[in-house]
Image (tube, rainbow, N blue to C red):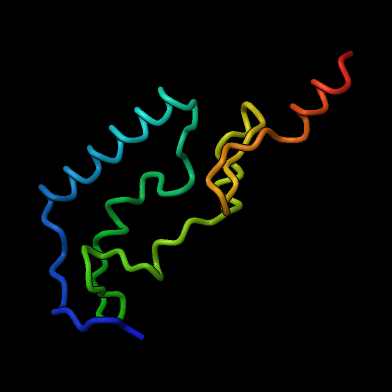
Length: 109
């Protein structure tokens, strides 16, 4: 159920790919600085492969990412911050302290 029929997308140029990767890295660095959240398993190092589908049925209306293919896996989001035991709630986007943290506060040793 495509909303619009766009012409077949050409693969992203290497220059556009590198710009996308750079802006993504800048974003993750800023995110980590501002919130302490590290994005690891959402996209990882596959950003180049994601945008470079070559077989016919994988081609999409955009730069190789369709809404169907680019889905955040809630369990991957939950794994992001295992170091400090918090995770992002997939529904609200809020950072949720894991139960361990709450227990530490409620039951001091």
